[in-house]
Image 1 (cartoon, one colour):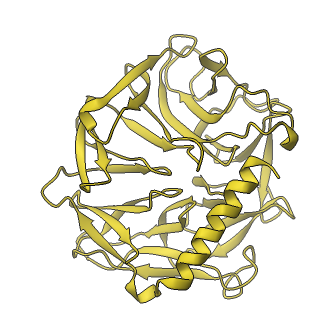
Image 2: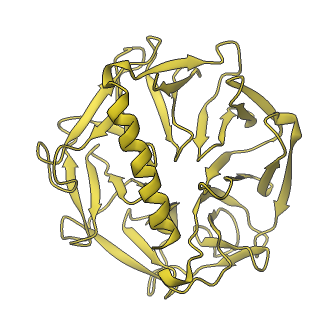
Length: 350
């Protein structure tokens, strides 16, 4: 069994055990670090939880013992945490207008974190960074041993290379430029990775799946046609997408296409996020309405069939009357929601 399959089996056992013990009614969102910083964005992995505050891009890291966010030196436009497993720690990477950085922390204190700059080729910098699990099990497809974690970036400014994808090579200690799909010059606008699987969307919102063994991108259909998505997110063993109408789709590997899960006419979804801790969504809502606009996907039958057989999203309220604006789904670190007042809410399983 590959390392990815072992990880998934262990997580599934933990999730099922927890679900059998903890009543759904006892699970809820709870605001943490009420006297701490206001955050604009949160990223979660297996054990690491990081946040940013805008404007300025101030960096914060959660101390899991005190449930407080501690300031880390520097500033970023985006941070990504993840890729960890039961055997490996998370990696944390960030980007800003000056470069690309990896972070290393020796203990729970944010003051003990240091960062290492990385210089992508071509004097460029990234507007997005994504991290996820690698798969170094040679029996699962002949790994080259150079990608124990998947770390991807999208170029922001270099002559003729804006939107080009780059993949970090741990053997060489640098980023390799990965070509765009064959016969395509359309830059990528978003990249997502998880479980050694990497997906991207281009400027035409077309959907692309990376085959690491052939080093090629393949276009993926939606409902049997070359449709479009505005967001894409990779979980432990599944991939979810969101189109411009707030409609949710899930990738069906049996038919190699994205299938409808929930129409935007049912719930107008503004953001979707997947990880080892499930699939969560933020519904579009009116500012200040204070409604329960964060929800979790509940599967009732075949996971890739349309509702009601396939399931639907169950709404939850935050501890305050504020609207949720962003959700981060970890693979062990839990579910974290930022509201429109910059308050951070954690999903609690008593």
